[in-house]
Length: 203
Image 1 (cartoon, rainbow, N blue to C red):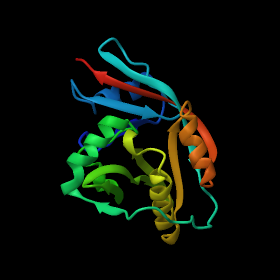
Image 2 (cartoon, rainbow, N blue to C red):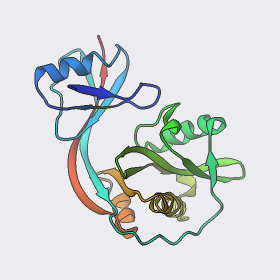
Image 3 (tube, rainbow, N blue to C red):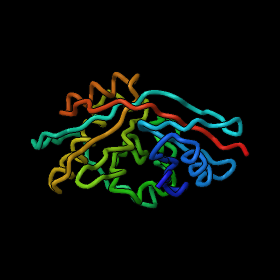
């Protein structure tokens, strides 16, 4: 397989098995004009002028190999479902934690914290490879930061994975030192760094 991607209403994430022209051609066939995609990994496509670069950075992939459960605390967390998608998308738009679209919740279980009815923090599960499961969608409303909500939600997500025999991993932009410090404090260690490219197809 030269290139793959999620359905666009689930995620813009795409991947290539190489960086040859044939891989780029295969990727382009998966992205409609006007849509965007994001790739992260060892192979970065060399895109032509009919693509607009939206974002480029380095991503740190972190892994939690330890099996010791995290201490859970903080306010009550609720399971988020289809009726919560509008609120989730609004929080994502405000905080920009990474790719999240209307059907992303179909990839796993997401939980959140509400304050007077407003969704102020969330975290959940996204991709998985074998027994390795990704912690994703971690974000907190700017007005609710500093209360430990992200740590509390990640603890619940990680412990759920551990009970299922899974190994949690996650991604953070290498420049996001605050998030990386939080993840290290929860037992995650750096596994690798990859380039990230987000681009929109213009024609």
